[in-house]
Amino acid sequence: MRPSKDIGRLIEIMAALRAPDTGCPWDVEQDFSTIAPYTIEEAYEVADAIQRGDLDDLRDELGDLLLQVVYHARMAEEIGEFAFGDVVEAVTTKMIRRHPHVFGDEKARSAGMAKGMWEKIKSEEKAEKRAARIARGLDPEDHGKGYLDSVPVALPALTRALKLQEKAARVGFDWGEAAPILDKIEEEIGELREALHKGDTASIKDEFGDMLFALVNLGRHLELDSEAALAGTNDKFRTRFHHVERALAQAGRSLDEATLEEMEALWQQAKGKA
Image (cartoon, rainbow, N blue to C red; front, side, top):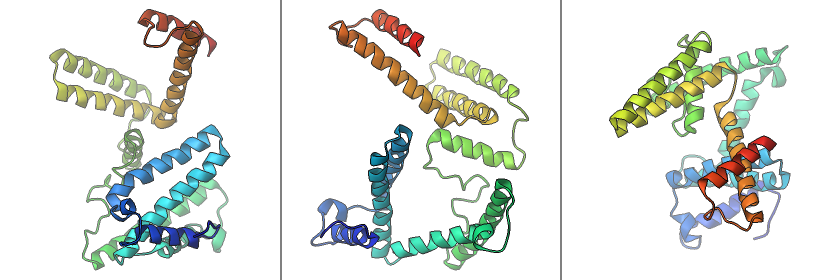
């Protein structure tokens, strides 16, 4: 078996890995649910390579993500559901159908018009998918019966909060402006303080979640992505802490040996440089 630029070789490799008698024992025993976490992890690693601007890593991470698609398709083929080719056909059909202004006769004079066409066609596809599920004897709804149930549960919590809020806003369930949300955040902080005072673990968790949800809502109204904002703060924290670590090392000391007061002084020094 030799490497190749042909997608067919990757499909062959996956088939060999999954072969019951001659394949890899670990790969053979996997199923959709056990592989799903790796699929999510690989998507994050793609995003990380992009964030770092490392195109060599991006090439490799995209390959790892593609492997996940091939893996799921192979498992589906083994149970007679669909194969990799069906996945490709489905997405090419979707892209052609959702872009009539590119592949058809319709015209879109702006990005807004193009998005409007996309949403209209998505709605039509949803109705068709519902009919197909009924024909197969399945629940007609993809993820449940509620308006918000189409927002994937597996999304990162901050992103899912944003998607839930955006969808609710489409039917008018939304704050009119950002200012009242600040009041809501202060209200949630007060409720968290009360829960902390009572020592009620369940209430503390609940109120902390409410506070985070309200913060995401504020970010949405300020046109800020909570995930991106927190990612920036994470990087800032890492950079400043690395400064503390380097400064201590230059003084011949380790993090374990330093006092909190020493680390705080170096932290403030790092803040002054950023």
